[in-house]
Image 1 (cartoon, chains in turn yellow, green):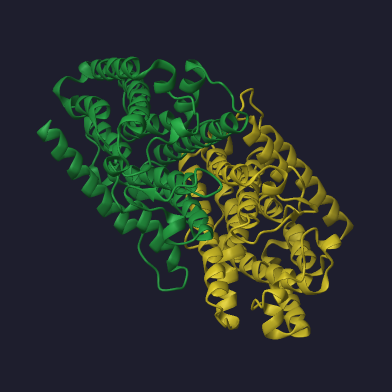
Image 2 (tube, one colour):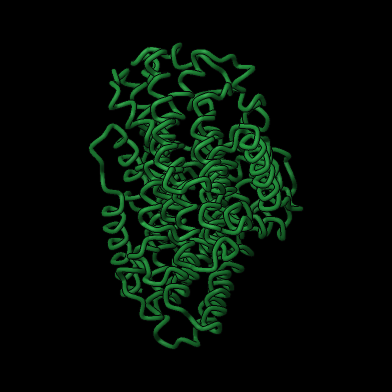
Length: 297
Length: 297
């Protein structure tokens, strides 16, 4: 795992550099927006989604100059969703990645606009010729990201989550699986899909990576639920124990800790197996599948 | 102007039909999101931006099936910006287009997510093959819309506006012009640009439409400022007198009513003249330039 951790750090650093470039500051008073965009997106995080974009792209020999742009775009979308999720009207969180959330550091209006701007910027980056020389590939990237992030994907999942809380719905395992598939799974899947699009992967390769991303997406969420129960805010970098306090149905509340952990491990193993087809080339992605269920943050 | 008003109504109705199709409801609990997306985007409004997309596209013989999709996308972006602008943390408005704003009708969390979903959907629509057969055109549309709506465009302008209010900055005419150029002008310009991209306009035609859109964008904003002073909430469909109450620098507060009106009329005339090159074909766009400064809503 040492090589994997080194690779993960290297990719995370490269993505941060690209984000730093893409979020260049301005001279005008509107620079407050850029400051806030930079605050939320340059401040670390595991960079799991960017890692997936880059490691998948690597499988198909895509130039890093391209894959890192798509990786930066997915991270912008992820960061925007966290900023809006943390707002008082949503989860009302003060702490994120161990730092004050955007609306605490700046103010609520700035946080709303910052999320909006990061989401918009992601599409600007994807649609720019530097991301791929073929316009059809750029359009396909925009389409895939929009579907994954939109009303049938991430935002739809957030809505489901809110409705379940408001109406105090008793979700069962299939319902929680669907909710999490939309809320976090689609963005994880599109990270792998981006690599496939950039690298013009064969249908076979595409299918295997889709299966892989489905499994790690679910494993990632189960691991998150376990961390919410077992981790401390200090380790995890955000408030923990919140799901339980809110009486929220999670994989852990529905399956129990042991069964949830077994399920996550099973999915992680299965995810890695999908990629045996690629031989040693997919080692990093297979390591990631293991990392996702063993991480402490 | 009778033909013009009929054309405007026809295009507005067609755009509403396309939006109705694109925002198809779902079976799950997340349908609350679709309801809220439909509530804010099917409820009327002047549809000035969609009109610009379609009338510009018509100049180049673009099929309506295509231009109406781009028109729906720009309207989604416009509606998302209104929903977020109206939020309590932003302008805190209860009334929009004569109806309760999204966070009043639904709730604040739903309004935030609805704006996010509409913005995302706009890119899904632009990037879809139905919008144009050439992927490069679709990617160029996404790029142009993202730039116009993003941190250097609309959202940047909203940030400028907030900072000016927070810091009680004394904006002069060039500063207000820049702010409004970003906040509303870019989206008006990209509406014409969309028609040029879809119709593969010549550089000459493109330049003329760019000049036209710059002029009507500014004229539109001056007319808006005049309506805020002279109109009633009933006529305008949203609260009026707000700029003055907030001590906000506007074209009217800086130039005075008469001078502002002269300026708007001058820009409207100039805008129409840019399009003389197209002969009678540009009649609707020239009528729009006149309508923008004479409207009462």
